Length: 72
Image: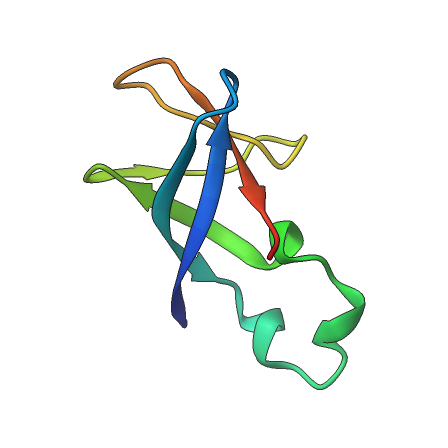
């Protein structure tokens, strides 16, 4: 799996840098039909690994913030 640096935004509209580990579908030929959010397996932010919810949001158990992936 591939790792990239991304920007995420929390529920207070504050931007943060995070690492995203991408699913295997990100490397397929038809990957352009998927959004970045759909390609992310999980994010790492401030040392915490966070899995996505069904709404493709990432909720931290450490600080209770909810993060959304921002596409550039």
